[in-house]
Every structure is written in C-alpha cells, then in structure tokens.
Length: 230
Image (cartoon, rainbow, N blue to C red):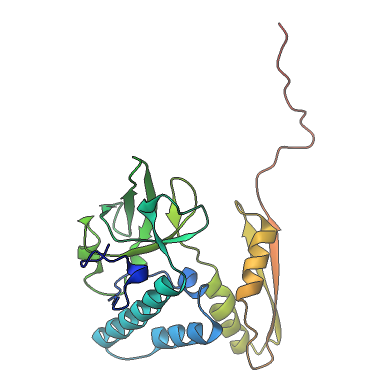
C-alpha cells in the first residue's frame, strides 16, 4: 500500500520519483514511441543534476502509468504467477555484495522469500545507494517474478532496439543479425518476445533475429543409467 493505504494500481494520484531502473525490461513494456521518448531523455546532454532529474522524472511517469494500465498486483497478495510483473510497496531488504551490486529480498506472507541482484550501474540518482540500503520501507518496487524464489529484469531489448541499429548506422550497414544465446529459456519463446518488441528503423536498416539453443542436454552417446535390481 502507499502512504494513504491505497494500492498503487488504484491510486489516481500515484506519483513516483525513480532512483533506480533497468531500461531494457522497462522498454519492453512500452510502445515504440514511448521507448523513443525514454531513450531520448536518457541520452540527452546536460549537467549531472539535470540528467538525474530528467531520467528520474521520465521513468517515474512511465512506471506510474504502467502500474495502472497493466493493473499490477502486489506481490504479497499471493496471486502473482511466474512470468508476471508485480508491484511491491512493503519492506524490501538490501545487503551489499561487494562495491558494484546488492542483493534485494522481499519477504512474502507465506514465509517464502524472493531475491534479486541489483547492479549499482542502474542507479539513476546520487541518493539511490542510501535509499536502497538495509530495510527500505518507503520505496515501491516493480519487477517480474521469474521463479518461486527469484525476481529479476531482462536486459536484451536495449541491444536490439538501440545499440545494434546505432552500430549499423555508424558502419553504413543496411542489414544485420541480432543473435541471442539461450542458456535457460526456450529459444522460440525468446524469438517471439523479441519479434514483438523489434522496431524497424526509419532509414532502411533491416534486422533479423536469430536465437541459439545453448541449454544443457544429456549426451546422445551416453546411455541413461538404469537402476540395479541387486
């Protein structure tokens, strides 16, 4: 709940000042126009203070709209399923893991915990480090439930929609291939996701998406071991 005991998804006055964000998973929820706006603000020049303010403001506006538009449920409600996005407005516990990352833990009502790795490179403002420290009871967390124990955010959309087209323009290349090595997820699922998010640039650059199945498999030359009858 927010400070007025209203769920964020039902709060018409929800206002978020963001201090941490992973752009790639956020961008996959946006329309092409909104993605262009987000990355335009992100790459804009200016003083450090102006950059922090602009980035924090645009992320806060977009996330607030997404929470209401997608009707994101509170993770502690017990109804969020694997693969679904959620919101959490209760305590989140952070512990440091070296200088460049932290571990975030959300305690669920049934006694389980879900965790995530939080790279400090995704911090938007200078206050992020102090806000995301120890027991944070005032911040809203938006994430996606990966397993019964893990929540995380994907990071490949930015490479497809921004980085590769930028490199291709620099090299005056008309076509390119975006290859993804799938070590855990089904390659077809990844291909379908990327195909929905891909946007074709306006200057005749064309991109092809290729996924490679790198999941571990049992060797075909090794017969499975059968239980002994003795």
